[in-house]
Image (cartoon, rainbow, N blue to C red):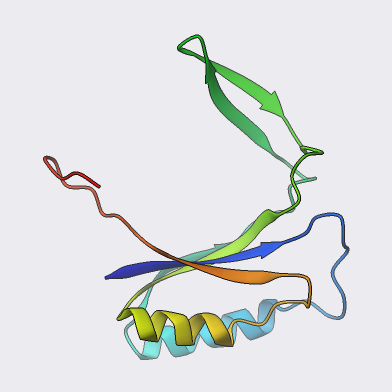
Length: 116
């Protein structure tokens, strides 16, 4: 099973301390060594570039961000393939600031004919 380990932060609170990227890179190496890593990346801040595509009256509409009503933003992610318990253990090891968190979600891999 694959899991998304989403690093979520509050864009109104500036990061505290040094960048967590070196620690994230080290953890990625461990995930690769365990053959659990499938993908991952950090994301630019929502204030750098953020667009929303939604539908109104069946037509696609685009809005420019950042979005004032957004309390949380996605800062990066890992996709791992392992058991649920292992995914949770990996998530616990992802370094984040005090006001951030890691959300663990099962990935739905669509195959024609599948239903979620």
